[in-house]
Length: 391
Image 1 (cartoon, rainbow, N blue to C red):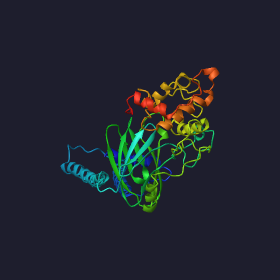
Image 2 (cartoon, rainbow, N blue to C red):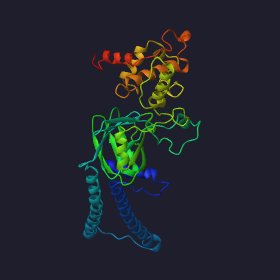
Image 3 (cartoon, rainbow, N blue to C red):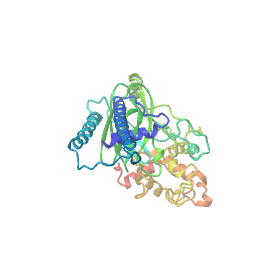
Image 4 (tube, helix red, strand yellow):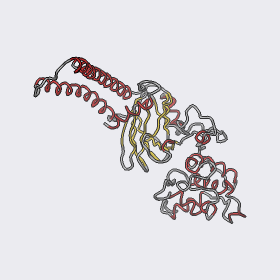
């Protein structure tokens, strides 16, 4: 029930320029729109009649006309009427609302099942019937966020990798969270469902036409709540099958572009003896996972998000640095990346952080400054921490 109410309220929040809520592109979104309009018209009629009677009574029986108040102790007919009439009106609203609610939770006979996991501050998508799993990160440039660049058309509503689904197929979504409560909301699909840790919620959609549909997290989930958008791309069955055949890979953004903040390149083997390759890879991983909190310049926002410039973690022995990425920091916003990043990606981003922003100056910071961390070092730490069995 509260999901339906939340949908209508959220629609209203974005409907100001449109005057009314959009009808959407799914059967459920159409039903929600029709329900919204039905209740609106019922409330409109009730409001006009109620305030009409009140206004007429005030004007017709005002004291200035010499009208004297009648004295009586009740009217059975009136009391019955004002009980039965509202009950009929209420039932006229409850029945269609209950029908829509029952339709919203009927996820049976789905053609595609996607698990959606909310994480501070990104979304993870797992295709349960396919060997496809990926994270979807904000792709708005840091310059746009800070106001040093002109804001783009889809400011804060663009990602490096959208969720892709077919049209005219029933898609079942399963929602959960890795940390705090999030909420997955795409207006044109008629879906707004909370993603809660330790609990799985469901929703479904049959999208009627191809296109790109955008949404946001609508649950206050932390400092970067506004930076976890949703982008869903609905494709024809042929295009969707081609996407599946390619294991969900799409052309990636150009990391040299000033308009892209969080585009992480596809994983390709790199030579860890070539520092420039490692730094390039690490930059991509850093932009995709770290910039939102620690900023492009590595200075972060102390004390909540610590600086990486000249601090002991990034200039001292690399073991502690690796451990933090694998375990996170308990009680802090720093989450574990053990399951989110590969050994190569963790090694690359740590190497980048230990060499960027002047951290590679050994004369200033000592022998560990500017060191290269390898995937083997990360794998060894996983074993030490019990995250992986030794071989």
